Length: 325
Image: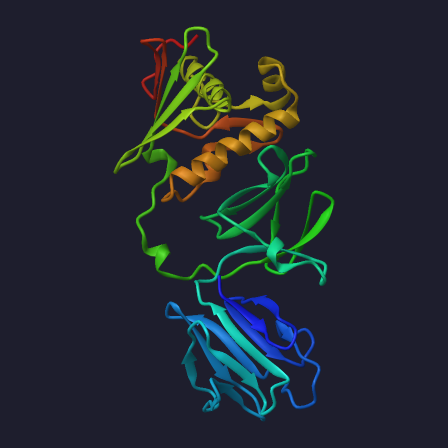
């Protein structure tokens, strides 16, 4: 994540992918109160896999004491100095030129920048031992979602610059546009994946493995795999009963809570832990949130190819479902 520093105060600034400096409130990302500064004085932009500086002002921008040609782009490197106007009042030093990254920043202006949280595609906050919030990215929709796990409210869309509440504190989302070469990678649908569950005879441990078109991924033994397995069993059982594919596997959350002997809040935590592990370990997936599908208070397992072994014996195979117990 690119980082510059205001030399007069030694204050660090994380750069947005299109970062504007100027005195026009609401139109810039770094607001400067000086009559010599233009409304939008300069722009630093992530372009062609590098950071570029551009002068858009009346009074000029200097890079390493060389005045820039207005409107032209200049690449940045660590150690560069950027000066707005011909005084040293607005002087910055380039500290880092890594690619832009999605962040959560403390909403209070006096909070130290070191508290910034770097976001992956699936985030459990404030941490996995004290789960309150899930913040995740839907690849198909190219949209971020926020879900408070302490309530039964549906996930809601969130956007760049929006404030969200985590652990009784407001945080601001700083998101960058995902238009880059990573979108050109070959992605897979969940329908292309094969799940294998290995359940111990006493049903105390569940081992999950996943086969993709290119490789096999070991999800190891985790407590949340039993929830996934339970929902896979329901899907196979419905198939044996002749229920149509669109209706197979749907389980009422309250009934699921009773069957597994846990409250719905704990169920939600297991669901998000399973989704996060899936997102973290299977990178090229278009619709990871479909690991579990939810609607109208019901949930089902989204996988379309799976086998369940109990001990050394095959319990069931889907879609060619054998008898599931």
